[in-house]
Image (cartoon, rainbow, N blue to C red; front, side, top):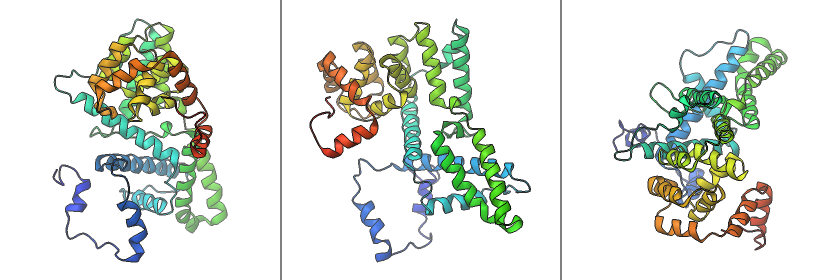
Length: 352
């Protein structure tokens, strides 16, 4: 792929780019990077998408803070926000597990959706769009709200974006506080430290008050799934059609609704790239065998399943007791799961 086709390759192709540090000062980072498992590393596409989403998120929050501050000018170009991004990154303030998890999840969802739509002869995605004309007005309204929200998470070039409302409250607060701290230096010059802190506190409160986690894509999808379920319209056929179209968030929320798990847990299982965990999740959601087979045929490779025959055999092998045990494990507190794994005991380990 040429640099002009994939911008992230441009710097690598530029042989006259700035020199990088050599010798022992760089050795610790190089050693870690060199021995990373290639199967676990980010692809260049994932890195580019996650970086772009994070850049835009930081810029949006910084602009919102500036707008809430009296006499705080917004930069005429992106250089001011890029400098802030670099400062936060160098200080490690962007390296947060929850934020990185959300960015990676979005990158996975985008990869699966794009891959599903590119299949030869595949029709355009119509499952969610078709629900806008549902006979139940609440379902139709929820579908329209989800479509509008998705539209707001695309830039003019169709690039996937992350919206402030998509952030968990703790992650949103951490980002807002970090960005306020980055803006403080410029504010102190004109107002003094005490007044700068007072203004920034008020600006942070105003920005946090605008956070509406109920408008996140996950919550809007969960609302649509709940309304469909209440109308007895959450059928195997609908879930299967959504899966084939790459609507992995829709599928995860549907399976979660059926088995009483959170949508986040269901999505983690579906994106685990572990055939046993994925098949267990499909069984937990009471997905019919033929629908599970259609899902595997349509997007199995996009979920990381290389042997579809072994995967469907795993689906058949699971007994009701196996499924119940698997559900008990994935429903457990993540800290408990971490402790069990750390202790390395057999009791309580994943059973499928």
